[in-house]
Length: 458
Image (cartoon, rainbow, N blue to C red; front, side, top):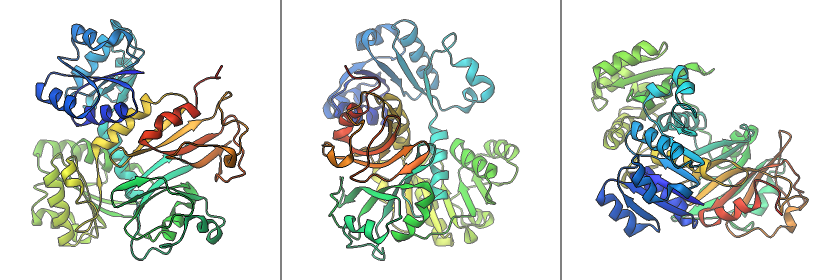
């Protein structure tokens, strides 16, 4: 497979790093010489300096025989035109564009704008929408630092921190089934002292671990309780930052079934007025989220959680810490810079949302080969959780799990057959049409794709 990535910013580098690590032929295009030099020094990719929308630059990058073009520059317009040139002139089979401005994405215009006749972009990735959805997912499952739904949300992948009071500390994984025979949950990954791996069935859970589990959605809350997390879902919420992400979160919560009390703080007066007109149940305050008086007016002292959702990492971190000091029960914030990611879980900040990682996950889901349907990147790319369908011709068909010689770094977490979840056991036989949720380390992704070919193997 040959993939062209236009844009060498954080998202572009993240995508290139994932794909190049799997041996995929990756070409990165960007105008900035410094970014091109850094790409050359750190990744096994081919750098092409130039404007990604220029035909001669795409020709130099090898667009004529590329399989996928991904446009993730800082400009929505450049991304759209780059995809148009790639599709119209070079007939690139699949084009993906990051588009952030909501004015392009409203239902009234999106369908008529992005099509073969106008702007031929096959897939639009909206980071603000993706991040907003991730924030809402975290709010719905307190106690998780990561969660994602698969198979029409029949299956959940959750990440939980193992604290000293976790009931199953020092318990070998193969004993969990005996202790909880009707629990449909499997530990598919463990991170210990910064090392992420697929555990053996006789491995033991230790305090300080981060555990990744695949569970039936209906068993998620019980699974969290077993692993020491019974946090109460937030109802009184303060959001600092009413930009695209803050607005998306507030609107989603307003449209949900649960009753929420929501206050938003926005420092730009015009933006505050615009959002106030679009939201009907939230209180909008114009002011500085770092002001104790504004935070108090927003109700932070009685808040179940404060969300720092501005475009500034430092403001998000400081706002969250100040809110916790003022009385907010929990705090969560957006953090783009990896140097700040280490603050997650400290000083009362239970989790940090990484927009870059979320955007990379969305794009990887469009790049994966075979019958891979959904992808969720784990952490900063050390592993992925994937949903894939078994078709006729797969080596899996008719095999019992105990007889499979799965490559290292792969663990099956759940099988869904006709909307019924089956917890994988040794005697489970795989059938055509099964959807399997797989946890795979980054160096095993290619092996997963081979297990789920797109068509019959000859």
